[in-house]
Structure formats: C-alpha cells, structure tokens
Image (cartoon, rainbow, N blue to C red; front, side, top):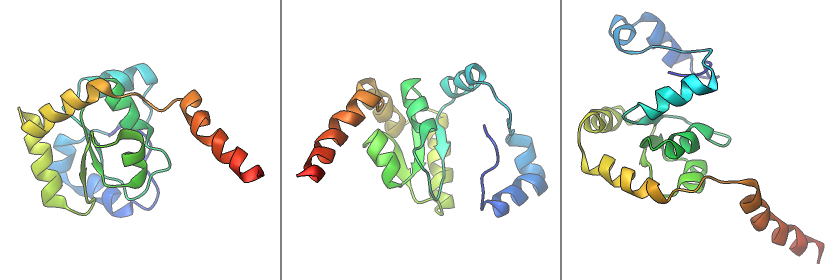
Length: 142
C-alpha cells in the first residue's frame, strides 16, 4: 500500500495492524517518492483502488500511463478518467475482489483485455479540460 492512511478507514487500519496473515503479505509505504512509486506501479500485476470516494483518482491515471492494469471501485470519477479500461467492482464485494486479484496474478482474459485497451489511453490534460469547460462557461454568459 502506497501513501498515507485515508480517513474513515479505521476498520481497514485495524485489520492491517492486527492481522498476522496480512502483515506477511501487505507492506505500507507511507513516504514513497515519485520515482520509487512509479517503479512499484510499473512492476505491479494491477493497481487496486477499493475506494468508497475519490476526488480525482490520480493513481488510476498513473497506473494506466505506466501500462499497469487497474481494479477499482465503480465510482463515477474513475469511469470519467479511465472509461471502460479498468475492472470495476463494488468496494464491499470481498469475494469479487479476491477473485479478481487472484485472476490477475497469472494470465487472464480480463487482464489481457486491459493491457490491449490501455494502449490507446490518453490521460486527462489541461488543454482537453479547458476545451470542454470554456464552451460551457460561454454558454453561462448568454
């Protein structure tokens, strides 16, 4: 897990702190530099984003730019920035997440689909953002 612990995740934090099984398989990197984080993401089988809410979802964009598949909660922001590329799951579907993670450890049709689909991925950028926003702002002035 890369990054600071989020808010309203006390239950997950308690599991990470108390579970011997999780401690053997999960490492937390709270202070990870950009280059180090990029190496971890690029070398991962998938980026996991089991979030209940996100403002933008920058890790999803970063993963897709690095060619790493994404398994994410089905949130509007992720669909807006990544379209149909990621595998979307309900964040409370533990069995679904486990099945997806195990599937991505080896060859899977879903992982292969994502690898092919992300070749055409274009990250959101400022010119694209303003190309969409400026006509809307002009319409407000009328």
